[in-house]
Image (cartoon, rainbow, N blue to C red):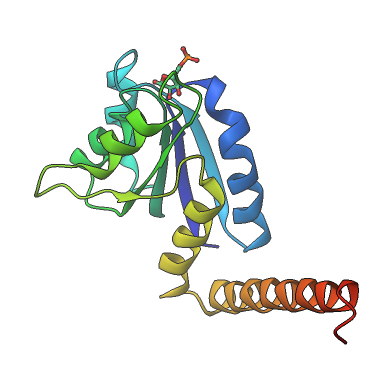
Length: 165
Ligand code: RP5
């Protein structure tokens, strides 16, 4: 089973990460979660990132708010793909974390998701896993299909409401 590492800067980030964590399960990926901060517990962050390839993770999702150095620091210790999720709960509504994550200096890239976008992070991790795992690829295709059906159903409901169908 494909595995993804999840790391968040604080347990206060869990409400943002939880829906992404659950989606990973729905897509057939095993997820391991750690709370560790780039500023408060940098040794744990380094250990997690350096051991990630050995633990068989295909990608790492790193969630953080405020200065949000976590995804970049994780990426500095591993060549695995790192997917950063900025958290909104700040005076700047997550713009601070977004800029911190998206503005990585050249050489150590981080894939920046939408603010609070842990579901997109899960889908991105699944897309990476799907490259070598046909079961995840099928589940991802199924997710897309169901999502498209949902949009079509909403369109039909609107057409009905407007009396156009
Ligand atoms: C960041 O600081 C964390 O990722 C969190 O989003 C933010 C606030 O952390 P707490 O003060 O709630 O622990 O490092």
